[in-house]
Image 1 (cartoon, one colour):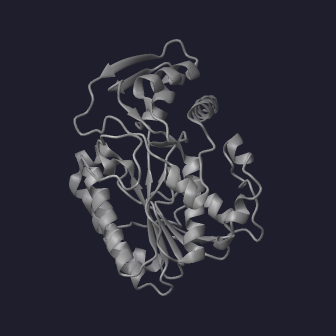
Image 2 (image 1 turned 180 degrees about the vertical axis):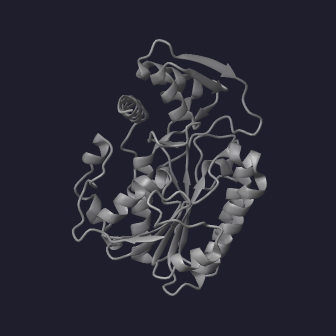
Length: 339
């Protein structure tokens, strides 16, 4: 694990801003998260897609970061969420926790259900127990997923819709949410955040749908579409990171729980349309699409309602899907050219 100090002066954009949207961040953003100054925040899963976008924002607001991730690129933030001693040590100075660490893919849950439950359910419960007795009694944000809703009858889906998890991964996230609710009832300031189809980085898992489509489109490969009529709510990682930062500032300022929040675009696009957009953006005439059947453990349609996050935090997306896809396609081309 590693503790990184926040900057002496909160500056926007962070020095590693990765898109025009980052550079266009309103000047009052850091002021709106000023309660994070001098907070010590443990970020589990710090080396993952969302963690990489989140940490510069927390640091820009003046927070110190403690990292915990099996994939920490420098090694000094290395730690296993299943290692209770490592988790307890990481919590020693923490005033807040953003719990991102997870088995984060539906297919991984189907392939290794025991590990999925150990990481997503058991380790979350252990983290909550450790946080409850940590010296500074930190607040906690739990990263959950739209998968907990399963297939809903009415779209868009609000946060108070019934949970109908369909697969191993979804059931593990719903069980972890139940542990968070129990911790809230015991007095811990904790909030559940639900994400939907987050994208935005060439270093993301290569088989996630957006990077898989765009990489194939740029290189002239094959885009496999598992159910072209299936549709989802895609959210750029920069927008999700903004939302988490704003939620963390709220928790740091009031130290009480708030109801679950969505960070979603509020739009739904079918996978066939997404693949066609990727092919157009890829600019490689050799790229082609093939259709495969829908997997029997997948939700077929999701569109989230962002109203509550806007009302509670003033959050909204700043990166529309067309813009985010174009940026990522360009990033893939740059990455390939640099090899």
